[in-house]
Length: 326
Image 1 (cartoon, one colour):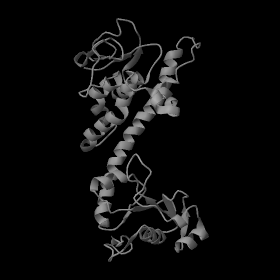
Image 2 (tube, rainbow, N blue to C red):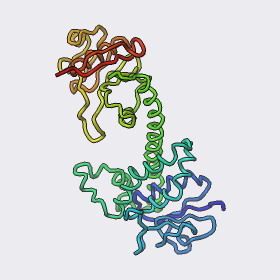
Image 3 (cartoon, rainbow, N blue to C red):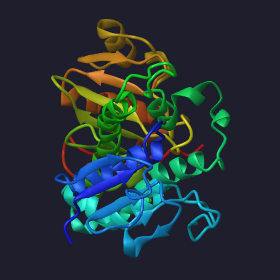
Image 4 (cartoon, rainbow, N blue to C red):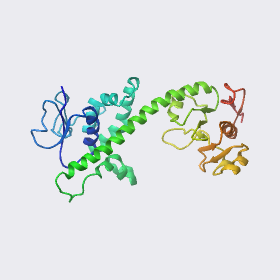
C-alpha cells in the first residue's frame, strides 16, 4: 500500500513526534504531513500512518500512540513514546534508506534504540526527570527541540506548523548524524582490529588516520596497548587510551615533563627532534613527522614503566616491549 499521509497532532510539539517524523518523512517523502486533532484525520485510514495521537497502538492499522491507559511497553517494562514505537516498526527500513550496510544493521538499530530512542521515550513519559541532568537539563535534546516552539503569544495563523517544520529540519540533522557516527564506528572498528593484529605485542598502535579506537581495543582484549599514533593534516598525533567510556583516566599518561610545552622546549624535554606540542593535560602530543612521533611514543612507553624487549614486527612501525621488573 502506498503511504499518502503522515498524521500527528496539531498545536505544540515534543521531541517524540518530531523525531518520529524524521523517520517517516525519510521513508515516505511523497506523503503529506498532516498536523490535526480532527477525529476524521487521527483515525486509521487507507494510505495513512497516525502517530502520537489517536489513543491506540495498532501496528496492523498503522496507528502508533502511547497516551492511552494501557501504555505500550518494552520487554523490560519501559514505556514507549511514539518515537520508540515508530523506531520499533520502521527503524530497520530507515537504516536501509540511509545505506547502512546490512551486516551492521541490527547492531546499529539496537545501539541507536538504547542510546537515543529510549532516553526520549523515558523523558516523554515522565520516567526520567530532566532535572537529573543538573545545569545541563535545558541542553538535553528533548529540551532543545521544545525550545523551538513559538512563544506563547505568537498566535498568528500557522505559527505552530511553521515552527514544527523548522524543528523537523533540526531534528533530522541530529538523528542522521547519530546514525552516521554509529556506522562510522563500525567501519573504524574493522580498521582498528586490523591494525591491532599488525601491531602484535607493541604498546603503540599505529592507525592510518584519526578514528574512534577505544571500543575496538577493548573488543580485541588488547590490554597491552598504551598509546595510539596517527597522521593528521601535516603532522602526526600521539594520544593516550582512556580506561573506559565513563572516565578520563588513561592507561598511561604522556610524560609529566612534556606538559604544555611546544617546539624547541618540547624537543629539549623529550629529546626528540620534531616534537611539536603536548597538551597540558598530557592526553595528546603532536610531532612534525612519523619518525618523530614514533620516537616520542617510545619515550612515553619507557617513561610509563615499560621497556623494549625485541625487534619490531615491521621496522619503524611497532616495537615489542615488556613490563619492567619492579
